[in-house]
Image (cartoon, rainbow, N blue to C red; front, side, top):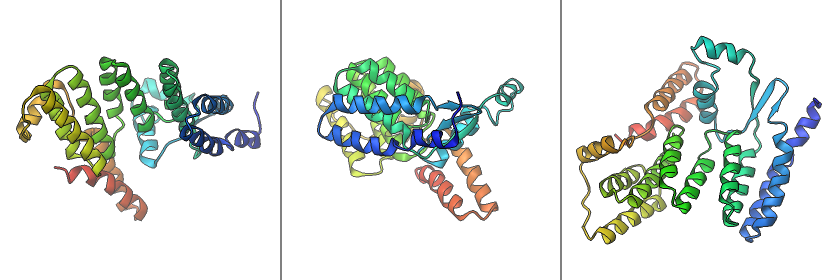
Length: 284
């Protein structure tokens, strides 16, 4: 059954209000009430995820949308097989409502209730709306951390890395990998990870967290940690397959979009893509 445009709009009209109510319930630690509220709203929007010839997504910012279009959806693929599939695929529509937040808050509340598998599944469904959401991906990593499932933590972190293009997210990625290496008592990899995290830290909280973990390693191993050289970090990173810096594919794409914006005299685009690109080039 297909509805009119107004019915579709109505299906998403309450998302922001529900998110605000859910945040208030979470602040009051009323987790069961938050889950009930969020699940009801998720049920309402979910049936419109794919609607006729359209499929809805909800990205946090433009570069996420472009990552999806250029690297995930197959729309710009050179593969003849994928191009044939795309011809029958729905049109991608970016909705501005914070739909992934419904899943994030619900997942968070479920964790507080000890419903870890439900939380993981809820967050996974949220990624269907925004595969590039760092909030959803880091929350999944946090669940694996709490469960002591280090293999899944590393796997999820490696998947999250594919979508990282902000320094604060890269700093978080290295901290998550570092925690996994601590649990495995791979001290050299953990130390390298936390120094990489410090290299991309954007605020005092990032720095404090990484230094706190380095202090824990010193206390646990009984050995004073000296800052490794760049060559040592590169060697350790190669051994443990830890990527250094942003994915080269995303960096190159940001540079191309920056250059295209300059050619088109798009001042907003110039600043946006320049910020993404320079955030990592300046680290070198």
